Length: 212
Length: 212
DNA sequence: CGCAACCGACAGGTTGTCGGTCTATGGTTA
DNA sequence: TAACCATAGACCGACAACCTGTCGGTTGCG
Image (cartoon, rainbow over all chains, first blue to last red; front, side, top):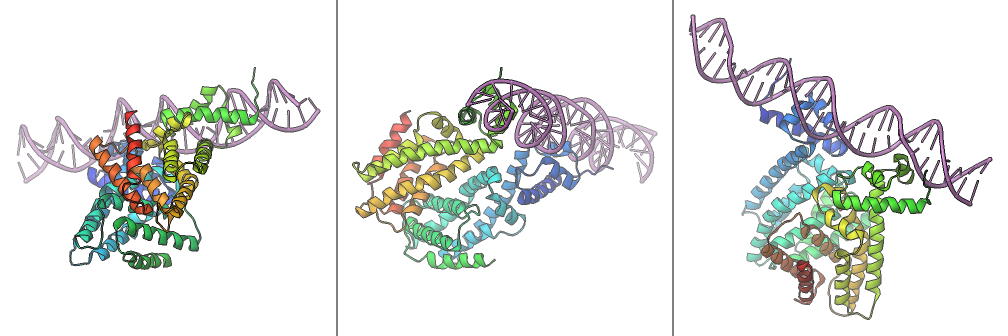
């Protein structure tokens, strides 16, 4: 008894399974067999919907990133909230994202998931950085920030946070705090923000996250 | 007629072949068969010297990075050259490295070489960043730079240049120039350098490289 | 003669392909 | 209205071709 579904539905089903598996076993560690066994479809079906394993990864990342970007865009657009607060909100939502995305995010940094990591990073640069940069520009027009290159400054900050706060960089609590302080110091310099104007609210955020 | 060589010699031979293959076909695109056929040894021999394919990659990166770091260290130590000039020299040597390393560097950024890229990046952060940071500190004591976090600022700069100036980021010449300008602007801000003090000599370097 | 270096067959796993099969749907006919 | 195809999109699973890593056995050198 073969079950037939609409293409889009099957595709999502496959992406769901893949996301969960990639999140727990990593991209390299997950075989296409794992995926198709998990949902009980045949090999041919998988390759009917996706042209390769990497294509599945791309699809998954696109889906997660679409959600992330949409959410970030919505938050960023709420002009009733002060700019700095909004930036914090967006950043917070990047890492504490709910749903399958969160699990994926955690595993992204492991060395065996290099490809996944790279693709995510690219996505982050292409989609999230511009959103944050818009906020920075808003801050500039309000006299909070001062820089001639808001987009690039944002990219630098985002990229560095992405790489340095990886789990792979296992470091003692003391080192971690030092790194975070340095990061905020540099971020303020890049954005031309007043000393402490970012650091203070950000440190709060980091401490919240640490407790989990 | 079986040829026997000293372990270290064979190891180097394998690393040489691997480097060349990885450089032309990428890490994923190169099979262990390719490597052992290239030098005419048997499967068992390869795995006698290296415990896995990834182990070969690690060995290769370590070798390249060792050379790079040694060269950079030597250049950085020459106190007869002004600090800014020395920084330029070190950076120049990172990308224009001679020998097999150069070919590898070119291919490192392709998407299929994600693992290679990541390992290289890690190496860069761990070994090269401190060397450059030392130079920055020297600059600080000379009043050229002003920052409380020389190491982290250096890391940010290095990381960003690594990612953004990848070939994968194919962009028009105009965009490229704009990005470079923004990069230098941000680097100066991070290091607390006078406007143009880095940008001017750096632009020269970029233009040289462009001509090749 | 002993040990380090080497060999190559082989197990177990992987991705992607391909010809063939099913099933839902919509048009046709009685 | 009901029975009857026809067809295309969704699905299947065997299979080819590869790939990595292992292991018992072999050989040459000191």
